[in-house]
Length: 120
Length: 107
Image (cartoon, rainbow over all chains, first blue to last red; front, side):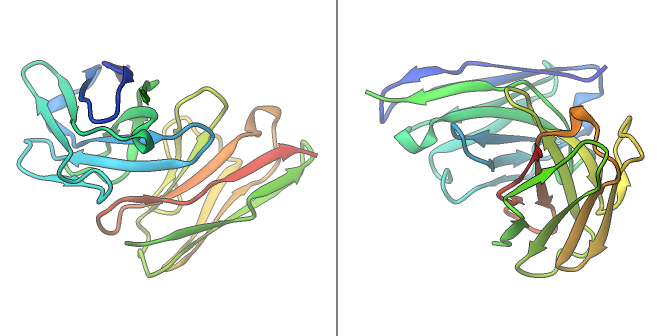
């Protein structure tokens, strides 16, 4: 059974940093692209960033480019999102999701999410 | 970026009735479109991919159609557990984008 468990969320002041983690199990992690998607309170889904299976390709939404960094450790079956220079508008539940293939496109499994709140 | 517009925003349907949801893309995405279901307090769940292929364990009452810019998700006979928000998502080009969602509520 595929399992994705996010951690690392919490309350942070504007301008601060957080690192999210997503522990994966139940599939060959190194064979699939992974992504982060966020959802602000009461709002819809917004794609944030994606990384290919071997980490040789990454993509970012314009709203986070230059502030967020996606990475993965295939030896630890873990996906990361380093978030710097956080803003109030980054407040959201952050989901990690597994791609159906080596490059992320369709998201076939999702974690339960971790809440990030940016506030003073 | 490709903008996905979902309609209607809210659909009021009685259990057992048919529901038809629409997703329109600002430019062609071929068949590179997926549909997700999200219930309150839960993560999204993949329903359909490549416009019409059902994901694992998705009931046959869920079907999808369309290509290019116009897509439809049909729920043939609504079950109580189907009342939720539905999102479409394109993977034709970066950035990946989602529609704003259609809430299917009990009439």
